[in-house]
Image (cartoon, rainbow over all chains, first blue to last red; front, side):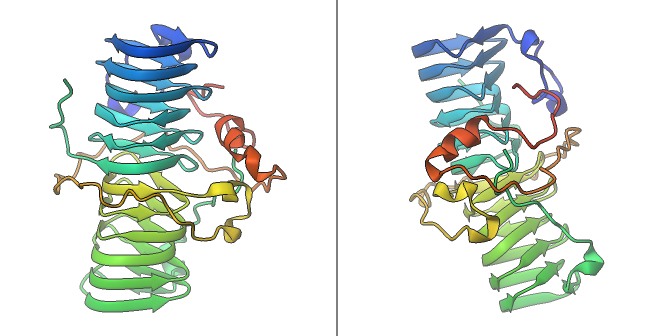
Length: 125
Length: 193
């Protein structure tokens, strides 16, 4: 389900993700989850997660995000706090700050914002 | 994608024009046009029209202007790169970065603001990417110095596109291209498309 090892947290298969929100769905509000969610549509609001959030390549997310792991292929506007890892894939666009102990930005990704990293002592409410 | 993304061309150490060894401490300003590798301690300013490599043993406290920066070591200070910044897994960076292309490997530590503005330049040739005014994000508070993050060997050593593809798309299409166009790249594990 959720890869436990940091090394695999950006490698997953879509079928292993508990909830996949398709690209024709628009959500405004707050979502909370513990396992894994993939967003492919439009989301505005807040995300509280104790697991894996995947932002698909077609997604447009405007949100304050608290999660364990974030993998983005899409567009995110907002601040992100991740207790484990943030991965910005090569198609991703991120406007906002990132706080996480481990970040990977692939070549081609766009990141505008500040990045704060401290090993392992970041807490998410 | 791959349109205009600079290929990271990090030459072997013996191909670098100047290698400053790790027992050398420099304070002041250096300027160069080709390539320099720093392995010692540097404080001051760096103006480069080429490639700056900060070695794993280096401690650099500097304002850096360069075309390309590849860091394996410790940098404190702001970086303005015309082309690309690469933070390798052993690197620690405290300070702001402005560059059209940035790559950060797993394990690297980056505290600071990052501004990437390539406007319509995403579909232009690399060398044509001019320095763009970036959004004013510089004044954001930067977290205090942290422990170097325990190294994570990342299996997913993904590869850059092998060749530059110069796209004919109009600048207006660049956002769509960035989002959707993954052609020209090798498929990676976990790729979603």
